[in-house]
Image (tube, rainbow, N blue to C red; front, side, top):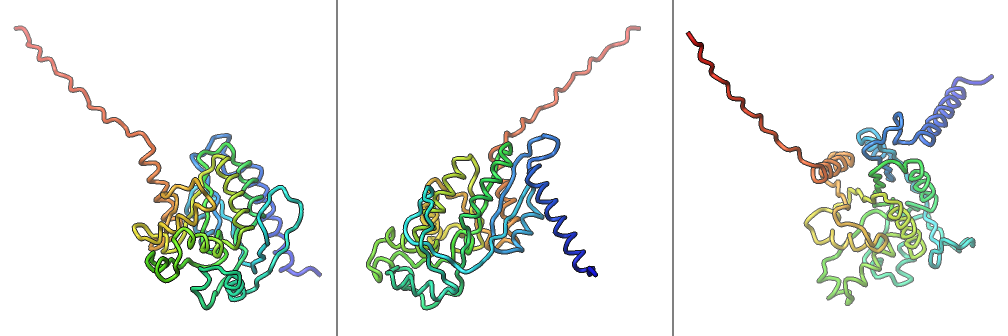
Length: 289
């Protein structure tokens, strides 16, 4: 005899398939053939952030990035290659840290432990992005928004030492050190190449790339933000500084994003001209006696 729990699970599964079909066939820019003002695809490793964006940002669709153990591929990324590259799997952050220290990563030398390590955005997500862009090709503008920690990066957080520390204690220039940070936080050369290829496709499609993060390193008017932007530009050369949105100190990511949308409407919209009402002079007609 089938239990009520099994029946309930079956109903939920069919409902999910139906909603997914509606999303794929109709798309976010539906509504009787009328084009919406914008549409948003959002990636984050936190379920609460995904729910927040879906609930509070108009025309938003969120994708939860699962935090599984990190599989690091060797060599350089080649989008045309059919061969499966060799890989190393790291089930915990300490193993990854020690590996990076062993191969001479200077950024890794600053740490004694690493709590988190995960896959973050993978090649699978590039398929999701391509499908979403095709489904919403009539929607303008299209925003593709990424969280940073454990979504674009494979670790949690970025430590940015002061420039004097880098020059005097580590005896290297800042550009070299930024390359070491990039390799560490983004998971190696293969994954960096994969991300570069993904972002080139997004840019070529005419979609707008944004990074929306709670990481305080991205806060405005502090030196660490400049280093953060250098790291981003290693994978997105055309990235605009203003497209790094820091939600640290905000009540939610949706609050920061909606503030960004409002600023676009204020700067991009045409101001209405104030029209003065013409004062009509009343004609005083004298009554003839």
